[in-house]
Amino acid sequence: MENSIRGIHHITAIAGNAQRNFNFYSKVLGLRLVKKTVNFDDPQTYHLYYGDEQGTPGSILTFFPWEGITTGRRGTRQATEIGYSVPVNSFDFWINRFEKHNVVYNKPAEKFGEQYLTFLDPDGLKLELIASKTADSRLPWETEEVTAEHATKGFHNVTITTNKMQPTADILTNVFGYKLLEQHVNRFRFVTDAVENANIVDLVEVPGEHAGHVAGGSVHHVAFRVQNEELLMQYREKIEALGLHITDKIDRNYFYSLYFREPGGVLFEIATDNPGFSVDEPVSELGMHLKLPAQYEEYRASLETTLPKLV
Image (tube, rainbow, N blue to C red):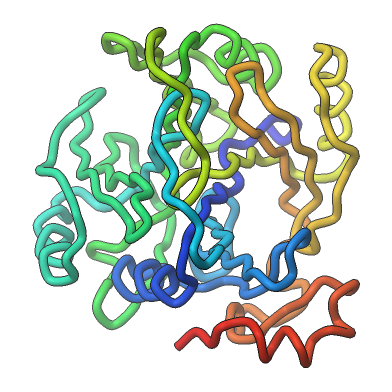
């Protein structure tokens, strides 16, 4: 399966206050801050990456924290839910923790035979903890308060809400190699067997719903994973042949990327496994230092002054 899309690489969302975002994901959820860098197009804004110890593809949630940004609105043409895999019987721990930290959540429910717990981050981003019915052997990042017994193991799935699911489904199946696994009412679950985890995309079809507004608390894009640059460019040819606009290859320092908007309106990225997050700092020091793209190094002194300190 090395020549296939290998599930989700990362998901990028938009936040407001950077310190609040850091507090929630690193201290409440217990994720590791894997990389502290800046937005390639807006270097006075952080780009924060959270994940497991090494920043393994399939565990990485990233944020552009724009101070003062308006709140988004969930709707169609959006990725609307991010699902994390957690150990079975961990929900009591998480509910107690959400109560302690005043996190908005719903009582546990079930879909596709799996228990899940929905909650919102401080900007309103909708997330789920899912007790997967498929074995998940991934090793989580642990903190003093969130140990392996309860910790998130990386992504379980992402949910896309759409007015018409078939055009998006065609990209997933005909280009990315996913298959329709099961359907419940208007939720369609697609899965790839190229990897064991972070391999599920749910499409929710709501023909009459209005399009959402991507802003604070919204997913900006969903990135899918390939092994290397050669495969990346093969996928570029496939997508371009469909008549869709796709970018040239972009060097993001930690992976190489292509971007295109799938027919349902969601921004998709295809990203490589190489070179990884330890290319500019050792695994033991990931997230400890401000790492800048080469074109912004000359502005380091200024950026270190203007970017908020994260403590």
